[in-house]
Image (cartoon, one colour):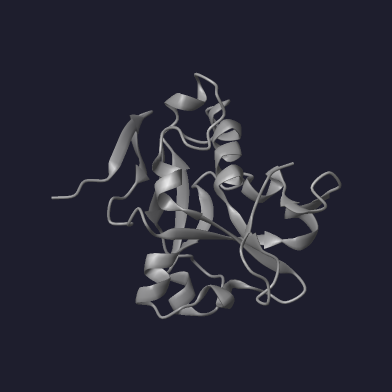
Length: 175
């Protein structure tokens, strides 16, 4: 029997990874073009800013899971919103990995990440897309600083992005 990774925190269970989400799946994060992509003069191109992976909701980082998208017959182009949103993606295996992409910091090496499935409540209107929703979490609640900022660095380094449906995937880099 598969069992989700859990931690008991303040008498409330915090589930941070669901093995039902395949490691070879991707999670997709919508990028607001004006806030999440910044031009890097040295690289001569846009890169993902730390704001793209800001942990605003106490529940987890909102994403769409490719394995669920496939089940619901959703393609990643569905997540684009013309003139407003691009898309980032990162493979679940990178989120779960203890090291690759993580900064060389002993605290960062202790961070465990995962993905859980959680249907979006009201947005977007398409129920199939809502059912493809999930959350990226770490082993401690997000307010357990300094864990999330270090983990966010790993997410950015492991990401690719597309600014529009017409673009190819580009390795993210970071600012």
